[in-house]
Length: 66
Image (cartoon, rainbow, N blue to C red):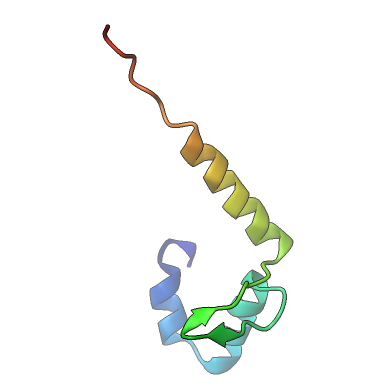
């Protein structure tokens, strides 16, 4: 399911969509001008977001040849 969450989400019923969203967001998501207004994520999602930022910042740097 996680490998293709978007396709799964598009195929399921409204009740399942609400369950998926409640696993991601800790509060209702409000939109302003078509954009989510400061969404509040659940703790597991916060961990995943922080880990992806940390892993992304530790990219292997190529040594400079000077």
